[in-house]
Image 1 (cartoon, rainbow, N blue to C red):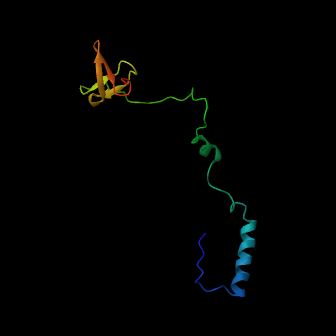
Image 2: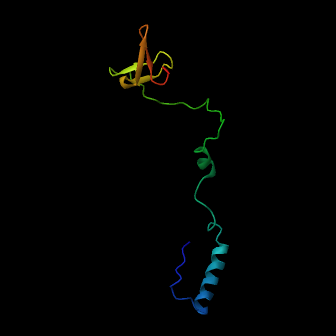
Image 3: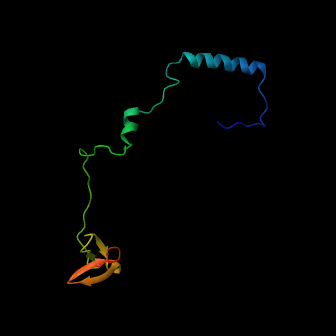
Length: 98
């Protein structure tokens, strides 16, 4: 919490009011509770090595476009600008042709 050091200090009378206010807040059982559900917050975090077999992925798969090719080594679909060489009718990408 930021503190304004230029603000005038409170007098003793004001501090008595704030003590009473603090005492009333102490008796209020909901004042210290956080409105966040711990279970819901924990579900957002994925731990390394967690079992994800029950998860279902939804991915939209597009067919290979006219300006793309499938590498014969890594089997990834890449843009034509990534073609390094063609051997025996097989196309290889820059990463695999090394």
